[in-house]
Image (tube, rainbow, N blue to C red):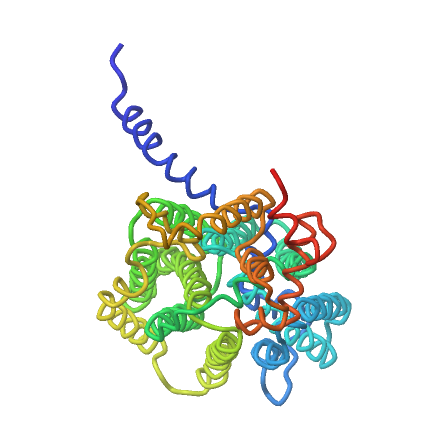
Length: 487
């Protein structure tokens, strides 16, 4: 019987792809799903005005959604400024609880100025929540987990776009979408644990300013290109929502394939984002017809691949190159700049006599040209080698050599060290716990460990207690006996 060539091709591709996917998915620690879901950064404001307000309230001539955006950006910068490594776990839960409370209150107050004030309180705390979410997303996850988290967040938005296209209980579905963003985020934050990220925060940094600059360039480009399009996209219809959702699902699948299979994967995603949006802008420039609008809105679905690439880059680069203090400065500046830009556009665009479609298209084109010019630098500083963040480099032992008389005395300490390494591996001590145990075995006090490792004494005690618990001992007085006891 003659085989179908199409079936043969598909089977061959599946056999080639699946091992890659399997190997990559093995890097995902599913118990850290709570850090992956960055729902606080998914689109929030697109249909708030129509769904949550019974009228169109304005304060000082500015609409409610613009005030909400302003409250969001102030909250993102101001509230995160009060966070530090000692209080961030509890502080995150406080912000999440406040956000959920004011959102629930807003559900019952939807008229007049009180509705706007409660909505602004909600987005103020939602902005602070978004900041702590991205902090934990950066330091608690590896590179594959960060990509997967951004992809899942993107998929959540796309699925709701498709559901809205069915026109079944549109207002209810829109409310359900935003409620999901708020309450899933709060639920995840209440599951955060300090031991999941403290080691990564205090690890030594490369401090490559070029990497940070390149990452921020694309992050800003993604947000500005996308936000300009929201002003020229036209009225959303069932058809445009359906096309946007279908392309979003396709783009999600393409991003997943590229990340797990292609070399220079994020670079390809960045190019696809710019390419898709340039087509969307050009179609809005050349024609106002319905077919051109539909195709343009379909290509807007490439915003999802931009979202995935931007946040994967943000987390990976900041983890490798920034301390907590630097992270705080960069995040506060970044969130406020693009949020304030959005607010400025919302206030000025309706009042300026300009052809917005031409201006928006030029902005997208300039960012794309800048990205193309920087592409060789992106390849050199961000993608070459595709090394996984957080990977532990193991230095193999040297080839056996005859020991001289001078080297003979070190044989016994090496035996103790070998036993200690084996026991620490057997009891699943983290790299930081192993460092601290090794120093304590050498007679260091907690304050000396703190000075040696560049971390606080309280952090040393925290890791030491975890190590004692894993080794089933009560304190450092029993530590030495564990590693030198007779086998």
